[in-house]
Length: 363
Image 1 (cartoon, rainbow, N blue to C red):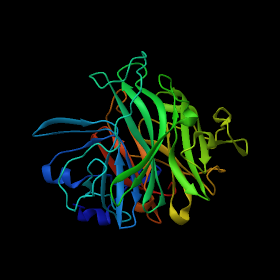
Image 2 (image 1 turned 30 degrees about the vertical axis):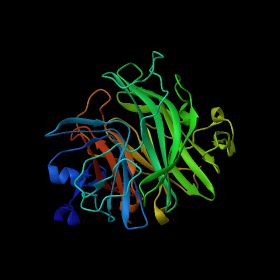
Image 3 (image 1 turned 60 degrees about the vertical axis):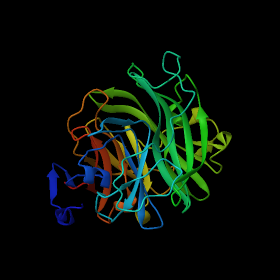
Image 4 (image 1 turned 180 degrees about the vertical axis):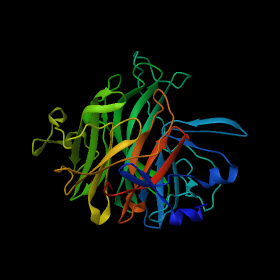
């Protein structure tokens, strides 16, 4: 349940950053059975029935039946209120199938099926085993119409090698939330056995002016867990099922060559999450390091110019190897005039958490 103290949460001051205490994003399955879902990311989109759809990446948990792991994606729906972290989501069954009647205490199910035809870095099939598995990781959600949500994802082979996240495809699923049905699924870009170019690994879909805009990023140089060199690019299309219809922003114009894509945000990014926050407009959360540091940038149009607005740091702790602070994501429907709601994976708690962050840094 939503704790009453959250309604009057105390602001915590960390140097120049003020944030509201983080809260775990939980479902009725967790609340009822007393388990904790280790989920790798959390995206949300408001629906026209007063609910919000949440999509998560890899999901693992332990219960009285043993250990469980769902690769790729799981989904849940539940009520939402601006300024509050959802704590009563209802897990969705694998599409197609009607959404559950709340409260629903059933556990997570696979949302998008695992991709076929992927290879591991050695050139062998990426069949699920102890050292690898294929997955479609969610990268964003956008509403086209109430009965058609676009869900972007990356197809990859996850391995225990020097190339742990071998991304070989980008796709878009079309989803009807009223019937919990994936009505179409398009693999837009595919390079089996080869790493997909960063400019084609897209997410944060924004639909405006008849175009679908999508963002990609790449960190090209790290130092002590901080991204010191990298770029963010934006692509657009008015026919998202057609690979040849995609254009990338390059030196003031959109061109058809992804190789000509140029950086649009003058800040090296370890991760980028772009959303339209109502009248506040477009904002990008740029993760700067593996400890949860970030910058907030804003723009009037998808290609910019982008202007830095604030800096912050989410309350991550612990972690090692590839299990570090990640997946910083904005949630417009949960944000307020004074604060942006940001979710992230906290390795210290092994959970997706969310907190309110002031729109502007306070010094």
